[in-house]
Length: 166
Image (tube, rainbow, N blue to C red):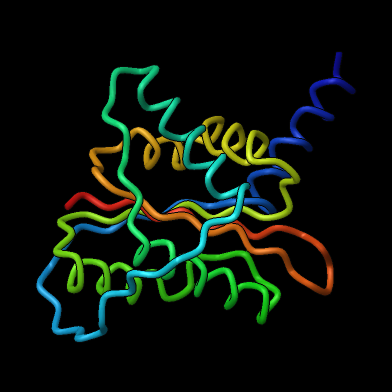
């Protein structure tokens, strides 16, 4: 029994410390003047992950979120940053959030990141099993963006999912 408990604790600590994190911010006035990005090409994993998130939201009586290319572009920028710096974090979330508030008029922004999940189902399940991530998934949001980027050197996937209330 004690060995099983230790093994379970290790798994929980490993997932919590190494694979994903969540952050959120409330809107405020910003003077960012970046242009709206309207083009973003979604890969199959991104579409599948967004569908899984919306399916979950609908199953618990919430609205489906509408995807916005600009938000997905900001997610992709963050994935590229994490790959280039070999980190999984929310560095510069305030800048991403302020950009989405300024460019899209968002009132509230939240972010989930994850790393090294092989499938969309595994990433979404990990987020739903984590209170902070789940809070963003079921939060009072209307729109979202998502990027899943594969590190060419390691083959590992980086996930950034940003939620917004517009």
